[in-house]
Amino acid sequence: MNFLIKILYLISKLPLKILYIFSDIMFFLNFYIVGYRKNVITQNLKNSFPEKSDAEITEIRKKFYRNFSDYLVETIKSFGISENEAKVRMQHINQDLFHQAKAEGKNIILMAGHVFNWEWMNALATITPQKNSHPVYRKVNSSFWEDQMKIVRNKFGNEALEANEVILNIFRNKNDGESIYMFVADQTPHVAHVNYGLNFLNQKTPAFIGYDKLATRMDLIFIYCEMKKVKRGFYQVNYHRIYSDGEKFVKNEVVRKFHQLLENTIKKNPDNYLWSHRKWKYQDSIKTYDGE
Image (cartoon, rainbow, N blue to C red):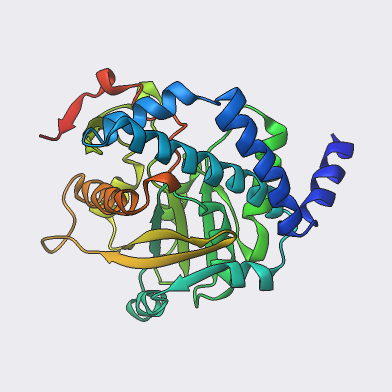
């Protein structure tokens, strides 16, 4: 394992223009030869965009494979990327929201989707006024890769928290405007925890609702992260505060609003979303459905 770690870090020090050569090779293999999860990707796209022709679906899938290949090498680059380069490659817009939260004395729940490249948001910790920044991660089957991803997410002064621990951590700590918790909030819940679903991208969709407990019980600030790929190797994230309709969030309100915002983002650039995940495989297990 030590040898593998050394190789990984050596590769991460290569310039991105070199790493993108590997990305181009992966794209060619995936799209023209291997067809990685081709059927899953195609079906997800057809279900999400029933109005699009087969030719349009194929074009989106092709662009997705390019973006996905870039994401893989960019994730490797995360191990060796410097703070300065991370700031150049990920532009953060509407940073005033973080100063407002500090002035209001309220902690922040950041909510991103699986839009490329969510892994490069970590350098945000170096430019916000909050003292504590906690990327939230989920355990994976490989302890090796889990350890490596924790290292990546702990960079730049972050302190990563496992998803099963984060809710309790938030409840126990002071709500004083000094902490940010970074969720990739469109995770697919385990089949045993599929309690709530909604209409998302024209489909009955199981939704992760852990953060909803926070919205209804604590006076926190919820911020949506709108990701955009500007060009190869350069991204932009625009931050939008999510407000409740009444004095406080009601049950599942923040979940619905997050998915509405994410759907709008995906529709603008559908090739930039992680279509290879089997996000809709537990549709029939939904206990409470909130959709048309």
